[in-house]
Length: 117
Length: 109
Image 1 (cartoon, one colour):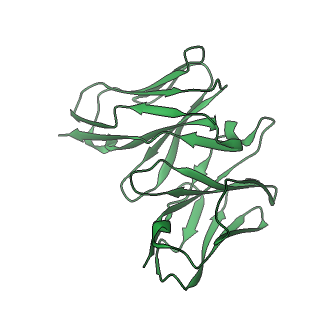
Image 2 (cartoon, rainbow over the protein chains, first blue to last red):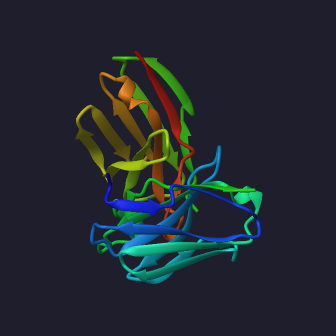
């Protein structure tokens, strides 16, 4: 148990559906991240939020829309996805220090396994 | 962007063996992360290190900043160590990490 929860754990959706992934952290952190892990590929950073402000969008298609209403919650809204978007979506959080966020230990949620039909 | 390479990609060993996983990166950094991913997907941060060596139980991580290389060692390996081990370095954007492809480790009883 890392203190970061994600729901749902599994999601199957059609290409015309709209769904949302939810992440919640109970660690008092102020930075939150979305990552994508496709089969046979390394983890890819999607979005970074620091104190509720988006600081990084790693060229992610607009069919993925993040939302960070407060430092404890992070959402990923999905619409008109493609089958190639099927992957494990991981959320993480960290406590920002003086250095860039990449130098702070990150705590990961269990992930949402997404299948797009 | 930092390029992160890990070796080997797959490793099968017998229980009790000493395990070494290597990681090299292309852009100079001040710290590197080692992560463990179990079947099912959950990821746990093992180490973040900026110099020398860190030890946690049977796990030891070393880094040579000048040579842009890090190693993760497991002593007295056990089947429960079976997992994917991932190294990650800053350089995936201003605040992000670039990840290696991971080393899939299987420890057989």
